[in-house]
Length: 373
Image (tube, rainbow, N blue to C red; front, side, top):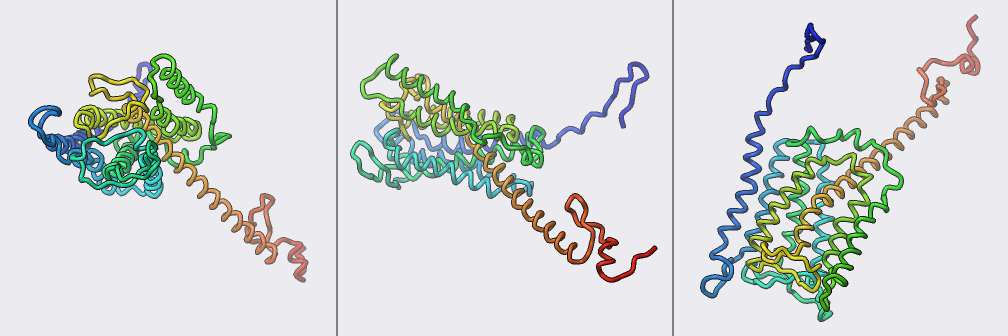
């Protein structure tokens, strides 16, 4: 009950009960990130570039995949324990399959153009085929860890967002019913939103060609990131922004940045798990992070935005399709009801709904019964 004070008439409300699960949730988040980090760091035998000849990080890349797999397992268990029936798991799976496959296609067709994998001892040694544009041939030079990397990172980002929106940051989520029923903007794809991405691509080309020209260098990887991971979610932004939990997106972005610092800047770069071909980079490097190209943190910063936007777009599209089918079904049922009402002599209201079942006078007369006076 709300009480009013005698003076001023100010309303006083009782404070809400504190969330006693919050500290345990924070501890679970810390452990979910700390355990795979420790597993990865234990795979390092000595500092990079020091000590006797030998592999300083045996199976390091393989063990580091726990940075994506452990959060995925933890988030799936958390989602199962909550048993949320409102989570569209089929759309979650479709989003992971779509974006993970996009990363795989990048590796298959452009992996040898953008990346190299100098440390063979950091992987299990299994490779899949990819196209080498330098020779125009297909070569088995891409480690199988790359496939796990793409699917696990996309799954971890999306499952983290889904869990945050349904539990930890649920108060900032929009109501699913209202979000799904919001009218779609016209057009669905807002193409002027692609202009910032196009401007970034133009600026990158001008920088590489005019400001810091290097013979044979072209910012292909930066252009790819903007064209595939930035422009599409920008184009879909107007149609999806009302249904996105932006606080959860911010949290996912911070976690992605933290993982990037540990995974790429601290481990992958110094130990050669993977490297970037400088002739396809913009030319801006972070010296403190083992000369890491700026394209790497840019990708990690925009990837949660891309993953969440694509997931939300699929969810809204499926929801509208389901409602359209349901609307057609209701109209068919109403039409069938009107036909039966006409055959039975029942009244049909002016708004095309079946009447209350009472016979109309003209229907009685038509049936051969005398009218009452």
